[in-house]
Image (cartoon, rainbow, N blue to C red; front, top):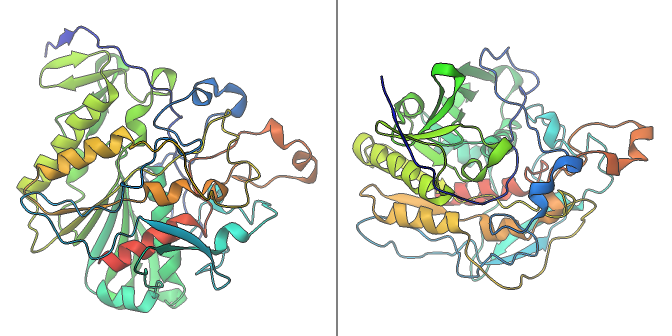
Length: 403
């Protein structure tokens, strides 16, 4: 098949390396190789040190108006509670599970990896004018009885999936829970409830393929290879943002493709809009709102300035932001959702999470010996993912409340 190669369009946006995960302990062998969590080495992360509206430094790109907007095409939903506007409150009754949860990846078990402080586990999000109910595992499982919930996205969505599994697994007897794998998906089963909590690896939602000459092509208008795993699920939670801004050597593709045309480069937000529109059309055409509820979680903020060391040794949440600005990904996402017929609920976690630069693994993404601990500046710092227990637990409390 002959492709028509289009003239390139220029774009600029420094970003991080893709970030993936390892097989949870205590489970069967995984025939599908999920990429492990990884990050750019601090000594080589010059691109992340430059200013970008897609990264969180002083929170200058945030807006107090970025609230959890219930976006639905066709009609507006009444706002019962704006979960995204509020403050972090220190709560000694947190965390909601132990850091020894066997389903956590090594890269997010910060306590086990030697992080000396633990207060980052004890912050609860309190919205203005309302409250988020404390997560109750048995109530959640009762709501999920005979149902499937699937989280679809990148390694930060995997981060959230591990959080949700750890929130519920403690009330299930050892012999009545298991993890299974199917292609790019993994599922935690609560057998007595006939419930599965699933994760599907699809960081771009649309298809990324290696084709002739081993060139990696991002197909902006093809999605079925990923979407076939989403059929028959009762609750779908999507996320896709970070990978779209990967550029140069950190990009996961060599060409964009739309129809029969190949593009060497494209404005990342135009590509993002095209990919999201393909996803939106699939949802509109293939899902029934009487059988499936769909959520889209907004982008998780990164604190990657200063070569990835912005989050190192941070022990308190930020208390305020300056120069508010709405991230472009959120604007693009809102525009796509508003044009949909299917009711999709936007769960905005961007603003509330941006306060939490203390919540990342930083150098504690792996265990270190005593000698290594004396030279921490020699190690790369992960300011994208989240320690668990931690911030994604609050996302899941919000999700449970929305359900």
